[in-house]
Image (cartoon, rainbow, N blue to C red; front, side):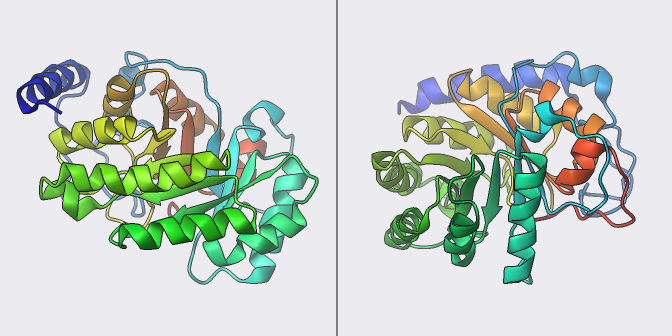
Length: 300
């Protein structure tokens, strides 16, 4: 990748996105979707007028975490776009069973679970339309390439149809771009041989805008299917600016998945309008039924 050409692309992209997204002034410091809203007015939920100015693309899927049990009127169109997700370390086999049965009941597109639960989820969802997704190198992305490849192979053997891999964040920030591409490509090669889709998690809260652009370009060069903003385990989630920037970099042939801070149906729709094909959030059932719950986590 020619460095001069890359720098020119980055400069043009950042100017374009920042025109619609001036740097926010966040009361009290860094915005964390796991904490009460800081009132910055910059996120996709509270800056709706800016959302209307960014790239509008048809949504393919939304992802969210374990929902509530109450039932209301189900929006099937949205439900079929949801990856019903539970990646918390304390999740038990019974929790995964519940996740799968909810996915069947509400007709979610997939469940996303930790690798140890892929086989269980696959058995429950056998002969169902709901797919099984898992995570690779999660949540730090600092595993050896060989380890990520092994994880991917085992996940596919257990029944995974999609994998969300965390790129090597430290190597990207250190300027080791060839290593980052090799890391992603190794997983992509194994997955694509079996028809399994790959999403690359960038952890945008830890990256500069320039690094976000580089990460997207590298993931695209490595033939990944999606770029994704966050793991849900770091200090922040998606912003409308990040989603717009990522969409602008990868274009329409590659997916963009946003994660963090999506709690309601309306918020999910707003994130879709920001250019995301999928959304990482909490309370899938709440999103499709509109039913409120007293506690909704913004992490996985």
